[in-house]
Image (cartoon, rainbow, N blue to C red; front, side, top):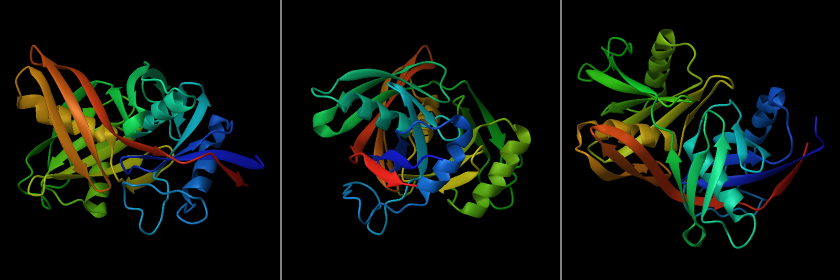
Length: 285
């Protein structure tokens, strides 16, 4: 056990992420993640984020471990787009002048991701991994035919390090999420992380709920970049070739996507939004 732990608290569009800078072996990720996720940074840490639900507390929704320059692992070795954006922003702005473009290696993605940094506006745009596959699942397969009789089928998008189910006009409730989660894992028990993106078309908002298998955590997140990417992918299915821009208003922040389609296929997904970082904080253990 370390005596001290150096961390940075990041706010990528309200999806509070704690980066652990101190070297930690993978076998101890969950122990340190549990420790920092329990801390409220609202008082005594001089953090003043401008976007997000921070009136009462600032607590992490997820934890990333910075392994080396340009390399970061999530605590469950899953993929997280917002954490990847925030990590790219951190790496690009460590020294002045800030880099305008950078490649980062992140868990749950087999290749480096390219990011564009606008330090003046605290914005990071990242090239998201393309879906490996997508499948339609009926409400019967999801185990919610009685609760959601008008649901019909929904699309499960596999982003390799995480899979997202995109639902329209279904209430974002924990009991419903858990029922869907159990049904999806009965179909594929090897999914490292599962998100359900609850889209409310009446209010034009989206509520992301994400479960990470290895650390057994479920969060109603402030925003979710990979889930936003999956939702944009699903929305683009009926769109023509070209570049399509979409905005997703989520509980604690807004994310923006650009989808490129060629010959009927999605060839690129870019996603951007606000990133704020705290100073380095040293915790006594």
